[in-house]
Length: 451
Image 1 (cartoon, rainbow, N blue to C red):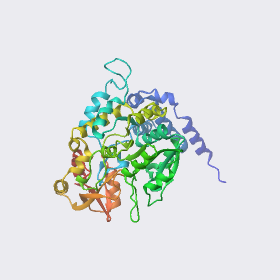
Image 2 (cartoon, rainbow, N blue to C red):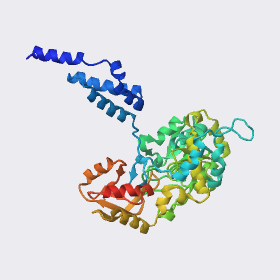
Image 3 (spheres, rainbow, N blue to C red):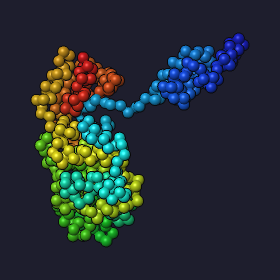
Image 4 (cartoon, rainbow, N blue to C red):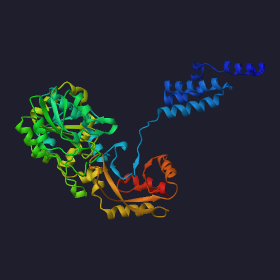
């Protein structure tokens, strides 16, 4: 093996010995400005990483290079990785992009409470400890026709808590066609079992009838559970009992009828071009005892899981030990409460962005697309827009998109690297930006990107 010349070895060792100590570097006037900007620990960590590179390469220590490296590394480590993204994908409730956006008016109303102290758990009349669920109870009764409501931190948590409170150590009857897996590999059977209940499958994947539930009901049964099929539909040779039929079976066997509705359908969606489906209020009118749903899907608020239903059932959820672990915070109560009040006052198409998008006429979308493409090589095409979030898995509505000429994959990457990233989709080897999912504040940066 060839050995390095002695002179080169001595030079390399000398470079290492010449590196100042960490404390000496951090104490220098040149580093003081970086410490004021990024904090001592952030600068120290950046310096350590740079010195490791210097020692590995055995190059001479250079103060100016060290300062530049510390500045760059500390800046990167102090920046947030959670950023605003423009949604041009044509998926309104986009799970990977944060689901439903929140209108500034809703944020302003919520911020007035969240930015200060609040009566989250304080009864202003008695001056004693209060109940945080009281802040949503009245508006939920008005909107949904339920007796009571409690808020968990998401719908999976709500379903887990409901089953733990109602059917612990008992069988929960669920159709095989409803044992779904949602995003992140979370499965309904796992949620049931983690809630302390026992899964009892009834029927088959494609055909389940009311008598399948009746035949399975026994003294070991704790509840009947209907689950919304998230992200897929079963078509062809299929059969599913109606909610009314399931309620009848539940009543005959003295079992609570539970519904993991999931999507949070407050208003009827057929007015926007989707199939007719039962709203939460209609489900309660049919006799369902308790419903769980997300608040960041069709409700259009921030993440949360509502448990709605009969007072006796909701009270058991409220008193269950899991409630402490699964409850939501003041920010969620403020934003969700303001959003629900927008429905109650019939201002959801003005104050909730996803409904503003759904209600926008196709002619207005074309006008917006013309404004975006004027003076560019982009073209306007007809397309289809999905509601997303597992709400209407097989349905879309008409929309308009603009195309960007060039290599689709390269353009997709370039648009994601913009100061405000723009997420689009590739249609027939062409990068497109769907106009329906753009918000008012998105128009200018999209126009600039196209230009």
